[in-house]
Length: 182
Ligand SMILES: Nc1nc2c(ncn2[C@@H]2O[C@H](COP(=O)(O)OP(=O)(O)O)[C@@H](O)[C@H]2O)c(=O)[nH]1
Ligand SMILES: [Mg+2]
Image (cartoon, rainbow, N blue to C red; front, top):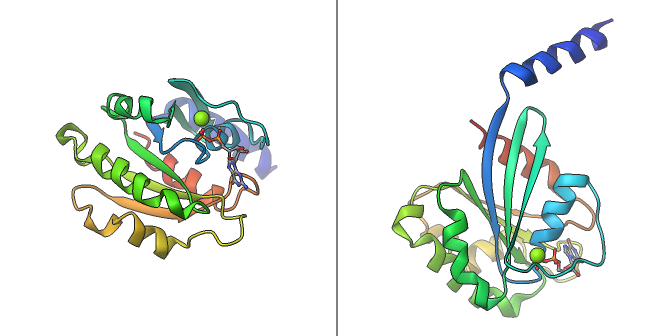
């Protein structure tokens, strides 16, 4: 039974080759950070999410990678904390509400402010244009332009359109996060 042996193999591989990655999820309030962490962790989408106060830490296992995820609040008074939660992580995930174009300028300002901290140089950046289920959302190309992503030279940068409501592109995002494991 190949399936039986395959299962056993993966179980052993998971024991001996298990990897870890620490990730910080930041972005303006109501962009969908907590929804993202919830969908990653439990596969569960919920309409009602309580606004995050300060931060939450979640541990999520995907394949043989264990992710430690900091979900940091996005209200203005918490934004100065982002830098501390991004210190030493394997990746920064910056979530944008791609349907709320009026907030792109603020998102760009906060993103570039964050990554300009010298000790965060080199940390891979994943920009997520969330809420792709909403009509009139910005495309990846529009996000790249609005957030000046091509100006970021000191780290790998990826940008995907996604939706936590209907799991659009969640598989690609999980793959990207898993590759940060070591
Ligand atoms: N339509 C839509 N709404 C979303 C999506 N993701 C999150 N939301 C909603 O956006 C609001 C803010 O989400 P939340 O996860 O609390 O954002 P946070 O403040 O960044 O943590 C909530 O009402 C969510 O239900 C999405 O992909 N599509
Ligand atoms: Mg939140």
